[in-house]
Length: 147
Image (cartoon, rainbow, N blue to C red):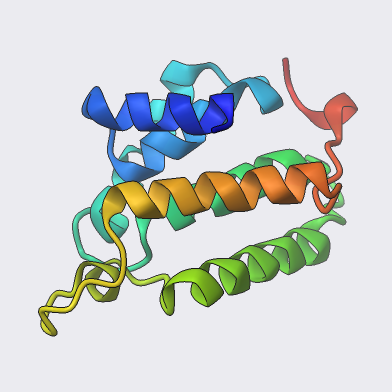
């Protein structure tokens, strides 16, 4: 098990929501303090503020991808297309594993047939991020990332 995945599981045990558990496990990669990552991702748990929409672990994947891929060029941004492509790739990977990125569907709300537990979604989110990092699908733009 990767160190980040272990950290994400520990975060969850410590009461972090799914989004917080994942993004905080990766925060050192993009120079964001764990506290700031925790704060910015708080509203994404429970499928977007408890509304059971996009899974918090999936939302964290998207946030991490943006933080790692964005050029941060406020005057003339040019990285949106490549970030969107990465997000779409990650969403497809998650859907291939779990058949959905929607919290209610993953939890089986309305069907009584859960597709994946929160812990399983956190595991899959970490696996997808680790795979994308390892395969260099995400090219870190360290010079653009604030320390």
